[in-house]
Length: 94
Length: 413
Image (cartoon, rainbow over all chains, first blue to last red; front, side):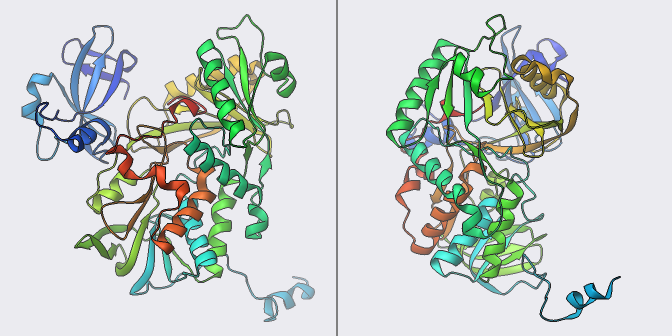
């Protein structure tokens, strides 16, 4: 992976980006148990396959999401957080 | 061929000595199924057979013996960690390594080299003072040393003050060492097989039958087998195998790239690491300099090389050892590191009654091979968690009781 297509700035060199880890749906702040918080903070699906993850474009301080295959290192899509629903299938919310 | 040699080939007095189980069919039942024939899996099998008399054991691997991360680590042995739990655990491992060639009757080429970690900032010096105090208190040889002593320990190291990150001090760990990583897994597996354990290579686990919180069957690419219990020891694939058992782990898999130079005459005895410039190095007994660094910047299940990481390693190592600018890179490789949030392993029981975890080995798996084999075997045999590994239970993440070793890695990841 040499470049990444930033939804805000277009295709840029990979050195401009910082990896932000897997996307996890945040538990309900008022009702979540400590088990749910522990899983949200520490646990990962860590699949050998497709995953939705956070990336940060450092020069423009912009966080966005990417769908990537962690075996082939292929980026399947990059998109703004608002478009998450269109890209999630099945069990991506962990 | 000289006739004198023929008699050795033909007489029954000189039988071929197999190290490992000759290829055979899987039995229908094993008391213990160990998933993963790396150093840890082999060591668990060895101690189960030798110390607990449990020999109806199968060690399964989708590839071959020691062909995963056991072959890919950089063979550093040390115990200069930061927490009491960590230091006690790794110290027990270093102690076992020292006597391991004799224990196994197999030369693992263990060498006590010493390990030097460099500080390039006041913060790093403070943390080394802390580590030295904790280590000494627990009987591990660690001390803070000044640049003059560093120069004497490693004459080739550039300790001049006109560098980008001048060296302020170092943590000298006289107990540090190295060993031949392949020999460690071969020696353990040979000892296990001699006592009746079966090694099955090219046998991939494809699933588990779990009922009422118990595993009773392991599905493999060569058919299903029933089992008394399962131990998973698959560094680099921990999340993938655990998922087959319905378990989720606090692990994120990153590649870690390393490389070796052409061989040189013996020039350097200790390991040297610099967490600040993300690099560590030692000279192998055949003369090559092994150079490793931090994990890749993002998660991946792929051991491909990247030019960026090789450039980072080369630029960092030539700052410390300018003569290496002349060196040719002989080969490079990567392993997959199962990083946990607190840089400590995940060992012991989980919600499935007879399924044991030996996972989360990040960049600290090789040095822990003997002690994790010994303690995991004790756990499997007695069903009681040995006190040495109690702090590393999966449950610690739910109890917010992490064992933070992030400050004690040889290169930050």
